[in-house]
Length: 256
Image (cartoon, rainbow, N blue to C red; front, side):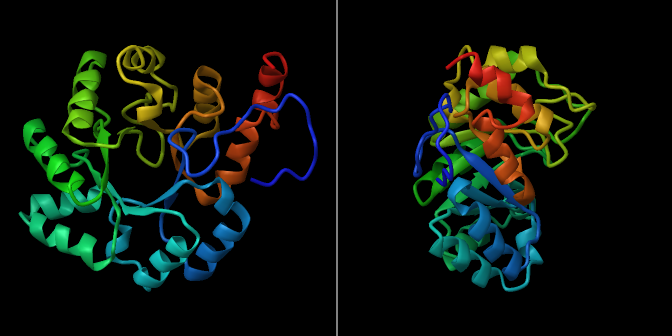
């Protein structure tokens, strides 16, 4: 962490490597130079990188990019849509080989774009958890598919029990499905009900929009796990977490 000045009443942040307070960044196709620039500017605030959906399939110099992240001590994983693309084609064993080929230590299991029996999904989580650290995504990318809160809780708990390290609350890169209404507004009742059963440190909330990030920070503190953060929003998000942007400025001053 860089603290160029001394200020009182700054919320305490967990330190890397951390179990919660995560910032998960979505790389949607950064170049090698952009990857290096991102690490130089924001590497200290990034906990894990997702190569969005199946962008890794068409990314040039993929191994070189992965090596750059690895040398910076930042774990990387392929987006869940790539997993789904292999599963729907009955190529799970090929997916395993891809993880081996690129020395991946994390993997995402999701079913946001395909219909997958939940017991079968949990079997994939269990199998992969014996090889890598698994993040599993709950929720659909279909805006018309509304999952009731009790079902979110059941799915999340089952996936944690199957071996997932953390569960991800679906929102897509636009932040307008799953946890959120089409307008981007948080389904607050859903989130609060989930939190009655699932520990907050076990959930990464996809929250690409600033208003969504502010809502979660105010609900769960500076050390909430947030995901699908764009590379150019990492530093702005950290200032939100620390009460150094107008949206959270008074909030932390009044609490510390």
